[in-house]
Amino acid sequence: MLPLTKGILFGLTLSLMMGPAFFSLIQTSITKGFRSGSHLALGIFLSDIAMVFIAWYGISSLFETVQAQRILSIVGGAVLIGFGIYTSLLRQKTKKEAKLEEAAYPGVTKYRFKHMAKGFVFNIANPSIWIYWLIPISVATSTYARKFEQMIFLISILLTCFACDLLKCTISHTLKRFMTDRVLTTINRIVGIILIIFGAYLIITLFVNPPTIITNLQNK
Image (cartoon, rainbow, N blue to C red; front, side):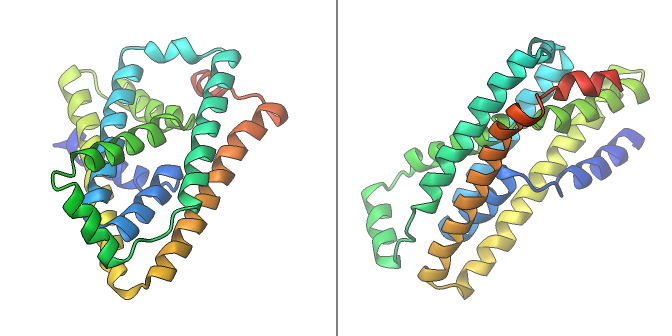
């Protein structure tokens, strides 16, 4: 049970990190509801699984060069800025407009995929995700000799982070009942600006301090 317990505690710690995906998750849950927020959380969860797979099998070595990390930062920064601009321009739909939209798309498959894809891209486009998952991988391989224990440790982290994201969605959705459409639109503006700042920061650091996230981590 030790790998499971440590994994849960590690996951709780990681879930407190506030990055672009965190703010997007809160904003989506408040303005769109728990279902949309949970779909976004599922997309984040799937991207986490992908990143663990990449780090586990050493594929992350493909991104060790400064040039590759620059490309990641530019692409990630551009994605965040793009989503930030889009989010800041969103106007909260009235209840009547939301009902008409729901009636027009009863299956809501389009919107489920939309939020899942957004969560996946948001999470994986952030270069700091390498630090986020390379550290647990390093802890797992250095602490536990058996593959089974390493897998238990990592799976418990993944599930804990996903559960915490769903909890964030629940709490955020509960707050919606106390907010007007104008307040919800303001939240869109604020989160959009935050995403633009994150994206700009990723690109600006290319000229101030060339990114060497993975290399620096491995040299420690």
